[in-house]
Image (cartoon, rainbow, N blue to C red; front, side, top):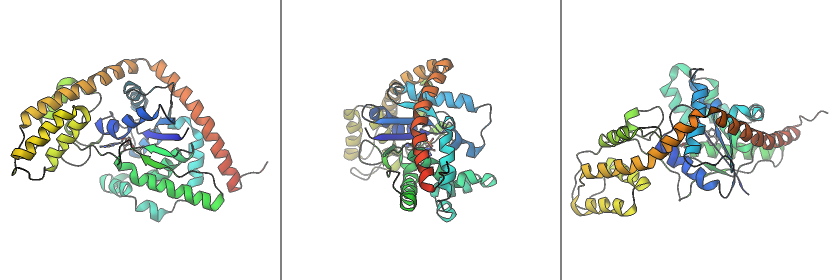
Length: 331
Ligand code: TYM
């Protein structure tokens, strides 16, 4: 079976972007691939989270993944910091990563803009750590959202560079989505993608209560909302239709698409009511299941321990080979 790796940072509540960009693919892939899914706690440290929040955030990401349908019997579900082999390979891979290329990465440039007071070295080498998460399991497919595409390109570069210098070890991993292209779920306010840290009112979380979901959708941006019949659909309206495609039946979506095509407008009140109802139907079972799981920390710890054991065994083999190829082979 082909090997799959993907990770999520424990930086806050998971949202629809995480679900439709990543988790939805995990759930399908667990049937057909050898899957390693993890909580990227080291990656979250670049923004200096409060130490007392970290354990709870890690547990919640695990619970929300399982509540979404991930089966810990089928995949290894673990926490990054339980695999010290990753840290060692990261050190080795840093010798093959050039400061110039790392400085050019768009996500690094964004961080420099957003947190100029904390441009730490971990931010710069973030793509190296992420590449190692993937390469150490010798994964070939990596289910991620569109925002991670560039990082995957770097993972391929590092794999190639290592293989070229020291000998063939790493397959080149590809970003993966069922469907043709990587997914980007828009924010409800029409400003960029949905994200954990942006405007909380413009983000639908898997932990949101029903009335919150309905209210957020009610407030979603729609523009003034009319054009000539047949005119191009404005971005904000397209965003809502895109969200509908995720949770509503196809006939409902095409009803509103047709309305726009024929009349140049849509009854936004009706659309939002329908979207709100279907979104509640989608999110509420996940939310309730995650709540139950989060109370059972013993169970979650058992899962992450078992997942780490399997992931470590595989990682240790790769690390061993990498060191040998590099020449760290003294006994
Ligand atoms: P993170 O924690 O920001 O996001 C987790 C996953 O959710 C996807 N995602 C989205 N997809 C579509 N639309 C959105 N609005 C949206 N927002 C988030 C992300 O693409 C991601 O798949 N660097 C990674 C974590 C990571 C990782 C890895 C991933 C660390 N090591 C190795 C894969 C393989 C990150 O920050 O994801």
